Length: 183
View (cartoon, rainbow, N blue to C red):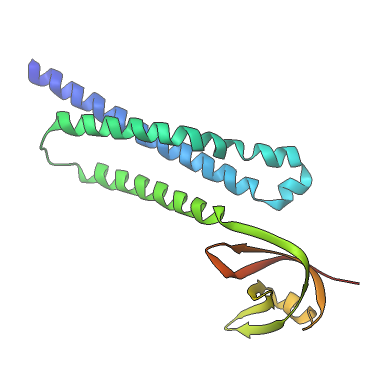
């Protein structure tokens, strides 16, 4: 009778920690989706209030994910302590590793994107060149990636109204958003 109760308790703890892991995964995915939708300029141009609301899942995830993570770790520890030394189910282990790896990748992408900066203004094209199959302009010592069409329309030593995105971790590389000639 006692062994049966212990087995039921282990099954209950397993389901609870598994549920917490999937909740954590869902919260992180929803936050990531909200962040990516909030970054779409077309939504901001269409309706700025809608654009701002797209960030709500991300803000919710910032507060909820750490709480659910602590709950998951607590339930996992409790499950492992009650289970004792038993052979682990490979399918369960692979699923858990996949979910945790997905969470780590999503968080890594989010951290990388948090260092992105948009710079705009009037710039003089210092240089333009082609490297491999990519086209670049040099603005304020930053190598800005452009399309083939934009590359052929731009002239060296001319001023343009330009907006580009670059990352603080790689400050010398960027990507062009808009470009218009200055009159």
